[in-house]
Amino acid sequence: MSLSVSLHHRFPSIQMDIAFEVPSPGVTVLFGPSGSGKSTVINAAAGLLRPDAGRIAVDGKVLADTAAGVWLPPEKRRVGLVFQDSRLFPHMSVATNLRFGLRRVAPGAIVFDEIVDLLGIGALLDRRPAALSGGEKQRVAIGRALLAQPHLLLMDEPLASLDAARKAEILPFLVRLKTALRLPVLYVTHSLDEAARLADSIVLIEAGQVLAFGSVSEVAARADLPLAQRDDAGAVLVCNVEANDAGRALSRLTGGGVTFWVPLVDLPVGASCRIRIPAREVILAGQPPEAISLHNIVPGTVRQIVKDPARRSVVVQVGLPDGGLLSRITPDAVVRLGLSDGSPVLALIKSTSIEVLRP
Amino acid sequence: MTMLSPEEWEAVWLTLKVAARAVGFGLPVAVLAAWTLARFRFPGRAVLNALVHLPMVLPPVVTGWLLLIVFGVRGPIGSLLQDWFGIRLVFTTAGASLACAVMTFPIMVRSVRLSLDSIDTGLEQAARTLGAGWIDRLVNITLPLASPGILVGGIVGYATCLGEFGAVITFAANIPGQTQTLPLAIYAALQVPGGEAKAAELSMVSLTLALIGLLLSEWIGKRLNAALGR
Image (tube, rainbow over all chains, first blue to last red; front, side):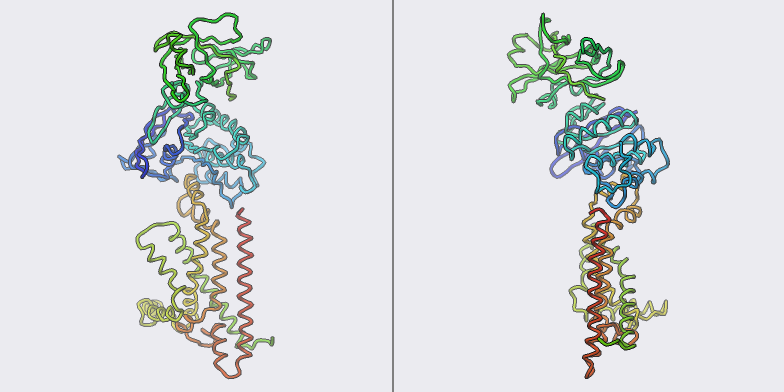
């Protein structure tokens, strides 16, 4: 099953040509600077904006196809939309807000009590939206959208209006939803952290065009994309916990076809998690160093070397058996190590530099 | 203040009835007009907007005269009403209500419109994505959120109806017991030598009613806005 989007729309200031196809169910993050057209994709998918031309289909169900004259109005689409500004109905209680969509569709798989539980909003049901905090409002808005039994969930920067503490409060709920409900989700953000935690697939959008799309580990490990030119650039790998060695206070993870040692995690063996390895923390070497404190010496192959003139450095993409890493080093180091596309190389990563993203 | 005479009571009661009917029929139409003007862009919208507001800027006597032309027994609509339903509006209580409704229409539309404009259209969009069709949205989202403006419009409209003079006297004439509302009765009293006392009494009634209307609209507006979480 898949979610496929193609749309062409001319705004006075920008021409949009967007096309991508991603697996469903799964979270697809639309990533890009503001004004690049991410929200246009969301609005077109919801039916609130009619593009000049385009086709949108979820799991074989066609929501819009301008060539065939198909255009389902928003109220017939069964597409849930969570806005940045929650948009709860101020004259209704939280419970009535939650039931608004639920009452207007045939009963489905998503149950009221389950969602209330999952989002931790049981204590808020009798309140009015005006009496909720920003984070609570957003949780209610997510619940309201889900209870309308959507075939596709759209989230337009749902955390952008919240401060860091509120974001940290909601992200775990989103990760939980992701595993509890097998839904296709389009998620707009310009936070790399949210993308790394939530995305199964990423669509990179800039100035109305798709730069790249693919699985999160694939896109995050490409040195030739603007993502790699950021200070916080880094690879994202989906890992399994293989062993917890309490004696040495280390955990062994496998991901990308290799093994990583990280400081002991409190996840059971067999659990899945994500790790982020910042490019600036990855050292490249030609030979294994001896008597060194670091635990991770990962063999790989140089896939491409991309200059980053703004930082007087280069970003090296290191291919692993199943995925890749990024390493930011100086041009001088490239010359000294004699690196070029295809060179075998060792990536040295401190175990403490690996960020384990809790599920 | 001395007690009002039976005829004076009749004028007060008639005024309240005429105003109630004017608002009862006028307000729903005003809501519809305000909603149309606030939510849709269509050719002729500017003309509709001007027409709606015309009675506010026209001399009331002109409005009354235009009503006579249109709703008079030989007017285009008046003759139809007469032939089909046997309804005559000119020089009747119903006619006084019509004149009041037309005169206060702009006030009611403006009040509703202000309220509609202050509603975040994003809420209607949200309702749409949750499966609500347009009637559903109008009934469950738009109208409840506009209710302060609708109620305040109704009350202010009602209070204004109580004082409507020019259009009523032109279209419905000054017939005691039928079309002689408070302001008309005051005017009639002033035409008669020695009627000043009567005019003063009726003016006091008029003043009291107007004040009650204004205070009520203020209070209700506040309460409703609080209930809507604003």
